[in-house]
Image (cartoon, rainbow, N blue to C red):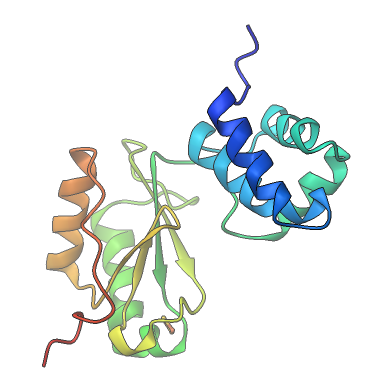
Length: 175
Ligand code: FES
């Protein structure tokens, strides 16, 4: 059996997405996201699967997957954590936190911890500057106002295989 295949339920989801758009090309991004959630990365066979599923050339799908940083063509650690060090976050402690992470977690040149569990990258503005500095996990969970103590709690949860709880934008600054 082909290790790279969508289930019937996933195919139905993808077809439902395609129905929302005038062309199947428009469904490339959400389909890539479904594939990345399932396979962890968009390796060449996954790109081909997405292309075949949508009936598009692999080169087109690959072009989209390699253009946007949210798509991972090669996963380097189990959990991807992106710390915003853009202007506001950088000025509000993000730069110091980045230095702290690199030193205390002994990141290698690719930003990966020695146990391969955490893969850190710097991110451009994540659109939540009022709660700087901001950390994004796996492109789908944001942690606001991060400091070393909060980061350590997040890493503990991830070590247990749990994503941190969703932090609502409406309660992140309760005062
Ligand atoms: S500068 Fe970090 S979220 Fe905007």
